[in-house]
Length: 156
Image (cartoon, rainbow, N blue to C red; front, side, top):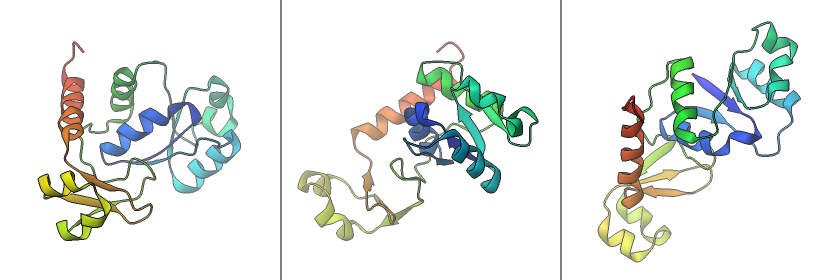
């Protein structure tokens, strides 16, 4: 399942990417191009723009869409999960910055690209071959897991 998000959903995009899903996002994209990409690449449109829902291809359900009705990220994620059936687990298979797939690299290949403390305390690194960003399991990793676990709780 692939998505394309409108300009109002940058934060939501990052979290869906953390769950391993392909989410196209550009913070300056026009609605016409969103529609064109969604149609061409069979993507579900994620939008907060009510006018987008009035477009012919969306109205006629040629293109699938989810109108994000909530302001807060946890509720947005729960809505996308409910309406599309995606699994919300932090898989870290995609770059949250550029959406490309990540690949594991040897520790020694990360040495010149991460801070010395990170290199000395971490053994597992992922590289985005597209933008060059390197990921590791720092304190943010635990926080992200806790965030996703709270989404499973119906009371949160």
